[in-house]
Structure formats: C-alpha cells, structure tokens
Image 1 (cartoon, helix red, strand yellow):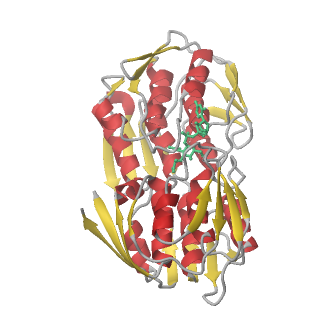
Image 2: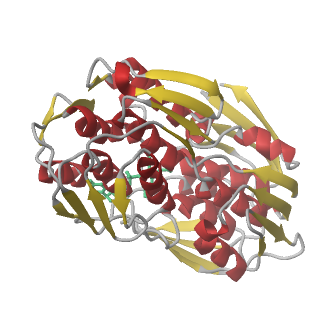
Length: 422
Ligand code: EPZ
C-alpha cells in the first residue's frame, strides 16, 4: 500500500482538468460486451477500478486493446467463458455489471458476489429482482451469483429502492430481450444517462434515462461504436471542496456544471464563490474568512450526492458554527470521522450512523491517519491539506480506485504532497 506525506496550510491556485466518470465507465465497459463488434471507449479514467474490470473481461476472453491511458478498444466476440474469476471480481463492486451484460448477450453468467468499499451492506437484491422479472433463473451458490435464461423477455419492474447499480444492470440485461422493459423508480444520476446514451449509440432503444421511468425496447443485436465518457462530477466536486477548505482560486476544467448544481449551491450557500462557464467552474475561497455552517442531506440525484458526503464534512469541520450532515443512502459512511477527530475536528456521529453533528473549529493539525475507503480518502486529503503541519495518510490505494493522479493534480495546484510506498 502507498501513503501520502502532506504538509498542509497552503492555498491552492491554478487549474485542474477533470477525467471521465468512473461510475459511468464501469457500466459502459460491461455494456461493450453486448456486441460482437469492436467498441472504442474514450475519456476513460485511468484508475484501478477501471483497470481491474478490464482485466476481468480480458480473463473471460474479451479482446481488450489499450490505445492509450484513456482510450480502449473492446471486442466481446472472443469471450470463451461466462464464469468471471473471483480473483478480480471481489476487488471491485461494479463487477456485478458483468452479470447484466453476460445475461443480455449470452443468457448465462456466473459472477462472484461483488466487493467494494465497506460503507454499508450493499445487497444486490434489486438487481436479482430485475433479472428474475426478465425470466432469468438466479441462484447464489458458493459466493457467486449463477444466472441462466432461455428466453430473455421484457417486463415491468418497479424497484423497491432507487439503485444506481440495479438500474444500469437491468438496462444491460434488457437491451437484447424480446419485447419492452419498463423500469420504474429508476435512478437518475448522470452516469445512468451516459450508459443509456452509450447503449443507444450501439443501436439499443432506451428512452427516459435520467427520469424515474426508463423504457427499453428490445432489439435483435447491437453494433460497434465510438463513445466518450462524460466528466466525473464527483472528482469535480472533490476539487471544489478542496479549494473551499484550503482557500485559494482554482479553475476546474472539463465539467458539466448542471451535474454539479447541488454541490455548487451548497458551497455558495456557505460563502464560497463558484463562477460557472460552459465547461468549467472557477472556485474562489477567501483566506481571510471562514465558511458558514449549514445542513446537508444526502439524496439520490439531483440531491446532494452521498459520494460527496465525506468531502463536504471536511469543509464544514472548519466552518463557523454548528453543521449537521445526514447520510440517507448508506448505513456506514462516517468511518472517516474518527480520523478527522485525530486532527482536532469536533464531530459527533449519532450511534445509528445516520448523521454527524459538526462544531466548526478554527483549525486542525496534521496527524497520522488511515484511509478506510475511497471517498473518505478524498475527504481526509482535503483535511490534511487544510491542516497546520504534517499528515501521514496510510492506505491511499483506496483513493486511487477513483481518482487519477490525485497527488500529481494537487501538486500542480501548489499542494505540498508526496506519495511514498508503505
Ligand atoms: C453506486 O453504488 C456507486 N458505485 C457508488 O459510488 C454510489 O455511492 C452509489 O451508486 C449511490 O450513488 C458505482 O457506481 C460503482 P446503489 P451502488 O445501488 O450501485 C441499496 C463511489 O464512491 N440497495 O445506488 O452499489 C444500497 O444498499 C461509490 O464511487 C439495495 O438495498 O449503489 C444503498 O443503500 C461508493 N439493494 C442504496 O440502495 C440493491 O439491490 C443505493 O445503492 C441495490 C442497492
């Protein structure tokens, strides 16, 4: 594992370019297996979750040719097995998208139950509910999901829970089914829309992505395509929170401002300047003033994203007054607070882990801390860069699951951060 050594207290200045959306790219890579023709995916983030999934599809026989760090050509025609090796699969959560893609294309899939960050129970019952509605026989055996279907047929599915993963997975399984699938209570995140647009560029017929009712009209086959992934709104939001906490003036390029609305609005509410242009946002935080306190409630899109909850908490720990952050999506997403308290943050997490009450402090100090998961790692980096003195952060490989060259981008903005091997 790697660690960061950070000397905090420096303002950030300059500009940073955001990469492709990890959580769109994962569904799109799986979707590329739905045709026997070659699919070219561009603006791919060069992060470990993506590279693990590419290895997983290569391990079942798919042809994967890296054009460069951010572009890959995939051809599923050479797949020789529908059994996905658990060595790769348990490293990431999005491995479950291979269930939807292999069911959709080949009518059969055996995939180890997904791994991922320990932020909650993260069941996949809604994924299986959708597959079963399409006529798929699914059983859990020896830590794997074993799925088989003779005739994949469209169905009317109402998700009990708004689930990003289940929405994408059911789309993947339904595009080649006979008949129409109506998916209600669907997730509306930008990456859902990106996956739907990608599948439509292959000849799928998906309507309503981005609303809570998605219609998939089954087609006979899909063809190859060239597709470029949308920018990652969580990476963008993370850099916006970084500036809010360290103070400074940073232009964040290659963003879709509309995808950032809930984050922009909250930062403006607490006193941070956010100027939007077509494809960039400029964030200015005055070193002479503390941000104001506020209330945060994480909600499904377009609400405040749960994937930004740790990062905004790291900003509010330095705010003037009391803030409350309520986490409504995952059951165990405040594990990083103990690490912030080592730095002097005054935060109390309710016993049921549903909310954190933050009493803003004027400053925090560097400490030796451990990263528990991906977005917590981003938040702890924000705190360390805003802290006075030196911080050593262990297990930063979690961060590299979702942020490309994070320390390099931070150094380019004036941060004093180096990465060393543990
Ligand atoms: C995706 O996870 C993202 N991961 C997560 O990002 C993100 O936090 C989450 O969506 C919510 O936006 C990927 O896209 C790879 P869900 P996913 O299904 O699909 C419950 C990151 O940091 N649920 O929308 O697993 C679930 O327990 C990661 O990039 C069921 O009950 O999230 C949770 O409480 C972290 N049954 C809620 O729904 C199911 O079958 C939302 O989960 C599925 C989900």
